[in-house]
Image (cartoon, rainbow, N blue to C red; front, side, top):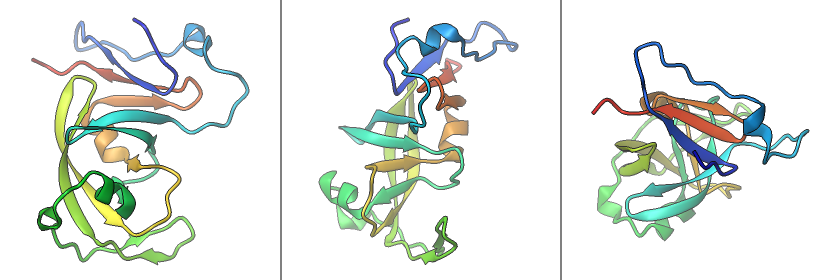
Length: 153
């Protein structure tokens, strides 16, 4: 299996006991030591979105307003949300609204909810813990890869 740094790989599930593993071979293209976050590219709606942060410490999928505008999503697709977010500094962040979009990753097509916020981002999207679980993924920032079990087809 050819692997890129900052990629999402699918492992074909052999049985119920199939395990996701990372080993020294996974580190061959990674400069060690590093403190890099896991940043990938995924297809959202019909656009390849680069600089997406995989963040298992966050519960929500976050979309900066600038990304929303670049994807040319219609304002009518926004759904009202009354739930504020809590930033890592403990301050409340009032979301603009939420939007549900098709995300393709690891041979899966999932409708994901994104909280659209007015922030000045370092990343185009932030994919949280719920999405990681739905794609049956295990991210490794050390190895700069996320592995997912293949979907049951």
